[in-house]
Figure (cartoon, rainbow, N blue to C red):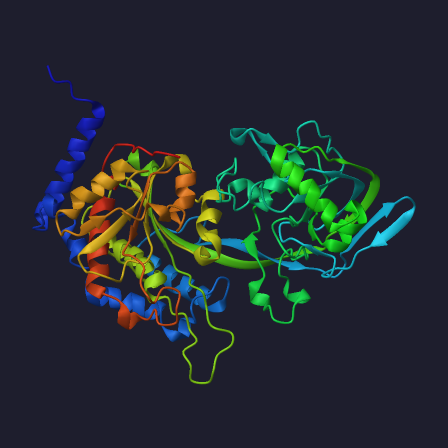
Length: 527
């Protein structure tokens, strides 16, 4: 006996009702997507891309007034399509913080009753990861500042760093040495200063002084971060950006130079011998600097700049599945304009392919769904991300503060650079990580085939899908490949293959319909 579940009965009834309604309007159920697909034309793609990548948009820099204008345009389109705002708005506001160096930075040591003061720029330079605070206490040498169990290495073994200020070398043991116990000549994550700072904090340190390894470099001059206020040639646009809501624990961190080395280790040659011994035995045996007392103050400023994602919801038609969400997104920002240019020279990074093309696919698919006679069972969230070019900020802001629960987000389709190269080829990134979604793409690709490629898996972290992947959400990143106009002022609308972008949009529409009407959850393979 075949047992019919209540859910199957309900689905069958809905399909029958839908079929009857469609029959009355002479549209068959099997042609559910045709009204949507036929609306996605090269002319539509040209309209969207030409607008978003026009000179008036000045490269849609994050943050910036032109990006805000693009956001208003996308919001108006989402409203016109009948999408629903979330929290009363199509815009998801968030802040980007510009990190700058303030004026009051102080660094000195006391030893045997003598105070030695160090000068900003000449003797020390704060890093951008530093906290804007002060600390004081005893010194301790912590080698390379690394704890790496997989390499059987720990600079903090038998070292008490609690309440102290640690000195660490800049990189890792055996740098550029193919026989290094770490990863040969390749740097590992442990050479990253954020890892060193986090490890110092874990071991109770209240400040970190970084020095360049004298055996590996001819100069140990402090460089820290290249702050515009300490240079005549570095523009303020080079100041680092980060999400303001990223609350990473930090301590004062500076790059100290030769004057500090001479004051603490007697000479650079003495420090060379310390490094030589450490690299040889791979164990930190030099740590007693308790007679040195340090005062350190780093004045790091965080200046908030507002910007926004743009999101619109197509609610699902099923009373149960509407609580699950498919996200379709692409970033709408680019890199702005050249600050220094000659009169008459092209200075606008229009970003037609990167990523007016992907944003236009998101718009075209949203418009197509609005024209379809039946609505999908699952909800679909269409979203245009800001700040991708600055560090995937928009998608990170979303996954940090999702408009809809991430636990109910079944998949994410990302569109970034889909308007160039061969009309008949397309790259899928995420084939290995999201095999179920990739299989759906291959199935839906049969209707209007692309030759699909998968060799760009090294781009796993290269666009907004990555933050969803980090949250365990299956994804596919649609990508048409790099080209000679990438991040150049020549990435203009006249270079776009509008037939291809329309074809991509139709494929995404079919994939989205498939996912949004399938009561199934998909595999995600994490590293």
